Length: 345
Image (cartoon, rainbow, N blue to C red; front, side, top):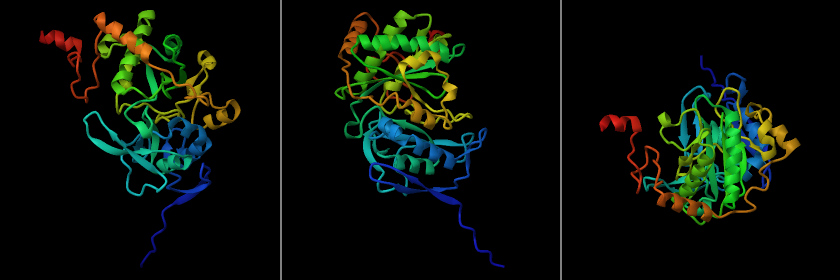
């Protein structure tokens, strides 16, 4: 007996945007992405609709890497950068240059429907570049990732972020903050897009070293884990080309479906990052508003931070290690962990 195949499950959702409403198809809408909560692909698409305007304001007009999952967040994960087959006409791309000197087109999201399409492609986490699509080589954001090490937690990152804010202000930069969606914090400063990635990296290192001077027992810039101790690591290597962190309002692939959520500085001391989730952040936006609504209205200069970099270089503090997949960089110290180097000696 011939059985007519059943059509695959799908639905559509209406997504408002700058060019009017778009009807976006969601296949397998009941696929569970977050097993602990039972949150589905459709739930995630609705979340993106709920935060759409703020999400695009923070992450749009930038090359973006999509962290996609073949099933749910406990399954296989891969990063998608190039436009996949079937990309809608309204989702554009821009050619970017990677550290290897290769160049490829990378996706750019310009409206909430584009982010909903990414969810349709099983994207959970969005990783935007710190540079704009029209000038990918010159970042317009300085970013510092405050990463709690074993023995420390989110509360330990709070005073480090506050001192970092003071340091950036002394350098003439206005800073914004968001939760990482996990245990840490991300501090951003809008900057003029007139310096390339290596300069911005040096500015980040200069700021991080200044925080380390003021809180030597609480924070560290040590790249090697064996040297960090129970301190907050100021991850300067996130400032490199093709290094990204979860964008503002991006979900994170963790069991309780957290979101990397912008907060106001006066919220920081009483913030519980676990309360910012796919289920709660849309209502927060409606009631509190977007703490990053004025992000980028004032772009600062990194010239003062680069003066600090030059000063530190003259004092013997030079280049820091690059990520392991990077080509050997000028002035970089030996790329071997200190304990192994001692054994070799």
